[in-house]
Every structure is written in structure tokens, then in C-alpha cells.
Picture 1 (tube, rainbow, N blue to C red):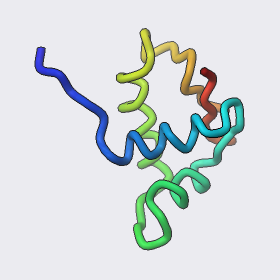
Picture 2: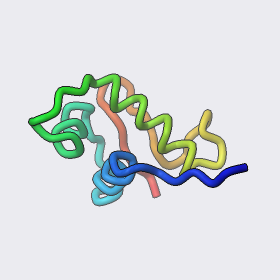
Picture 3: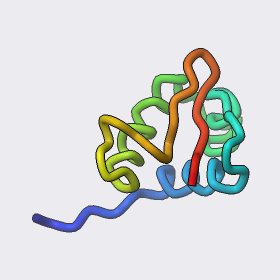
Picture 4: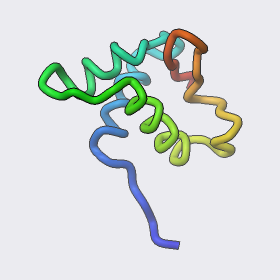
Length: 79
């Protein structure tokens, strides 16, 4: 067991979501705020980062209680 800590993008994404708990952020909103207009990641990138973040903050990442998927809309953070 080597300790693993979240990276810069994971922290930036979690910070964004936690600033407005319960607000649903679209993938496009997250891409613009975290990656900016100079970068060209896809919306699937957001999904991959959500999986990583859940590994850090959720007791059971397969059944998240804090970083919630809102089908067809995006993600929200529930403290």
C-alpha cells in the first residue's frame, strides 16, 4: 500500500464542484473551468476524472454518496 494523492486536475475539479454544493455542472462547464479553452479534452475526460475522484472521497466508489452523476446533465457534489 503506497499512498496515492489526487493530482492537480482532480483537485481543481473537486474544488469547482464543492464551491456550489448541489448544483449540477455539465461536462462542458467542468471542461471550461478546469481545463480552459486552450485545451481540447473530450467530455469523456470528465467522466474518467470523476472515477478517479470517487476513489479518493467515496467509501464505496461504485455507490457514490457525494459525487453524484445526474443522467443526461452532468455531475453534482453533495457534502
